[in-house]
Amino acid sequence: MSTAPASDLDLCNAALTRCGAQTITSFDDGTTESLILAQNYGQVVADCLSESRWKFARSQRLLNRLSGVAPLPWSAVYQLPVDALEVEGVTVSGAPIEHERLADKLLCDAAPDAEVVATILYRPATSAWPAQFREFVILRLCAVLLPALADKFSEGAAAAQAAALKGRRAALRSAQGGTPTNPFTYPIKGARRG
Image (cartoon, rainbow, N blue to C red; front, side):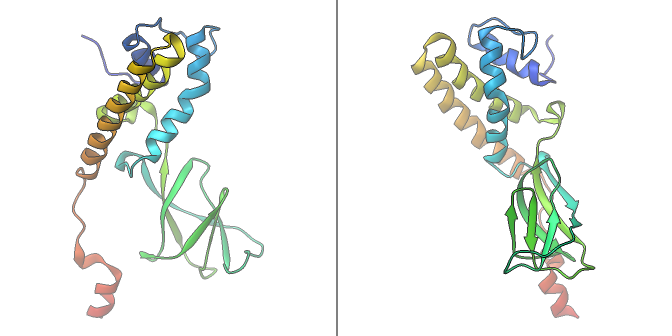
């Protein structure tokens, strides 16, 4: 009985075997397959992660305020975590605030003593990915590998369509996998209740 792919190399080899290609031992083993995957794997994963608000890839992080003057119209600059692919939202005391991302910095209006928390999208360890997302990545890799390795453009297009469908299903499953939001916890409700 085989086990689920638990590493980047396992995922790549799963895609290669589906394409009828030889597996690789590393991303730099000198084969055509390893060259293609070394150049494309990271981008495919980042693109798959960016396609939805995956719950397994979200994290809330307390940001560190940086010294210096923020560019107008903002009053504060914060350092984003190095693993932040996207910023989904920023809050102060649980209330959302307007913000702007500037490379690895976050610009906003916050008091000097405010605790600014960002909800970010990041890349968790491959072994922590749910099965639906792993399958999504494997299919996206097949869509890259089939035309590149064997000039199988129609098969590559079919793999891309299958990946799109799997991505939608995986995103739906991820969205359904949490506790429903309690409407009584919204900050405006708390303010009304006093």
